[in-house]
Image (cartoon, rainbow, N blue to C red; front, side):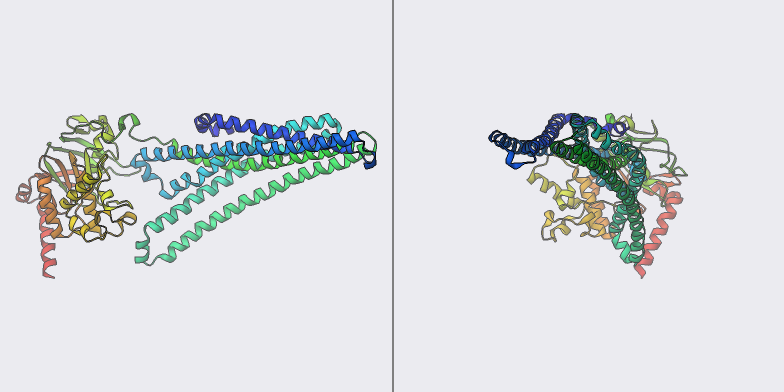
Length: 596
C-alpha cells in the first residue's frame, strides 16, 4: 500500500540509486559493527571475571586487544554512520529539488481553467509544506526504516545465540508493537491530511489579505480579516493538537512496551545467572543488544508517523499532478520561437463557449471575420463576451473545434507556444513583475543583447507614451518595481503592459480595454502612435470607449455573447442603432464632465 502511494517517486529514486545503495550498505555496516561491539563488550566482561586478582598476563593481553578492537569498531560505526546519513539524506535533498521543480513546471503547463478552480494559497501550501513532508519520507524515514530492518534481525539472531529462552521472553511484549502500528496509522493519516488542508486555507487567507491589503485598509476591514485569520488559525491549531495528542499516546505506549521488555530482561536474566545458565558478560551483551534494538523500535514509531504524513501530503500533491492541461503538451510546441509564421486572418464561426461551472454561455453563436492586416474594434456592455473572445484567441481556454480559424487553420491545430509567440495581448488588469521597468517591457523577448534590449524597450515605451514618465524615475529603465508594479500609477501600469506587447512586434495585437485607466489626453497620444504601428498588423481593439474603437477599420457591437451590429465607425453611427446610442451616452457624459 505504501509503495502504491509513492510510486510517482520511483523514477527519482532510480536516478539516485547509486547514492541510496551505498547509503544502505553503509547502514548495514553500521548495524553489523554495533552488534559486534555489544558482543565484544560482553566477552570482555566475562574475560575480566569477578575476581580482579585472578587476571593472568594472558588475560590482560587479551583484554587490551578487546579494548583496542572495541575502540576500532566504535570508530568504524562513526564513519559508516556519517556516510549513511550523508548519502541517504543528501539523495533525499536532490530528489526533493527535482520533484519540486517538476511540480512547478507542471503548474506552468496547466490551463487557465485550473487556476479558476484552485486557490493560490492552497497551491503554495502543496508546493512547500507538503513537499517537505514527502522529503522526510524519502530521506530520514527510509533511513530509519532500513536501519530497523537491519538491526532487529541481527540483534535477534545474536540474542538467540546467547539465550533462546531470554530472547523469547523479551520479544513477547515487543510483538504487541505491530497491532499498535496498525491501530494508529489510519488515524494519523486522516488527522494530518486535515492539518495540511487547513494549512492551505491559512496560506490562502494570508495571501489574499496581503494581495488586497490596500482594499482592506480603504474599507477599514482589518478587523474582519484578522477575525477570519484567527478563525482559520484556531482550527489549524486545534487540528494540530488533535494530531499531537494521538502521537503523545502512541510514543509513550511504545516506550511502555520497551520498558516491559527491559524489565523482563532484568528479571529473567538475573534468575538465569543465579542458576548458572547465563554469565554476566552475556547478560551485558543482551542488554546492549536490546538497547540498540530499542532505538530502531522507537524510530519505527516515528517512521510510521512520517509515512502517514508523507502519504497524506503525497495524495494532495498527486491531486495536482493528475490534472492535465486542456492543451496537450504535444500541441504546445517547444518554445516561443517555434518557427511559426502568422499572417493574421481570423475567422470565428458560430462560436459557443461556456466557462467551467458557468450556468450560462459567455458566447452564443458568435460569427466574425478579421482580414489579415486589418484592425477590428469590439465594444458593448460589460459582460457581453468581449474579453472572452480575446482569451480564446490567446488559447487561455480551448474553443470548440472548428470555431476559430487563423489563416484558415483551426486554432486547436496550431502549436500553442509558437502561436502565442506571435501574439501581443494587453489585459484589462495588467500584471507587472517585481523587476526593472526594462525587464517587464522585454518580458516576452528572448535572446536580445543588452544595448539592443534597452533601445527596444525605449521604442516600445515611446509608442505606449510611457517614455517621459520613465525618464522621471531616478533609475529610469532600470528602476525596480514593487509587487505588481505598485510604484506605478494605474495608467502607467497599463502603458507598461502595452509597451510589453508592442516590444515583441506581434503579428496579432489584442488590446483588451488597454486604455481604460489612462486619461483622454494620454489616450489620444497613444492612439496617434498606434495608427502607425497597426498598419499591416492584424489587431483587435476591445474597449467600452467609442473614441478607442473608432480607430479600427471596422467595429462590432456585442450584446449577450452575440454581435448585433457591425460596420465602420461612420456606418454604425449612421444606422442610429445600439452603437449610436452608446456613442451618444458617452458624448453626453463628457459634456457634463466638462461643464462641471
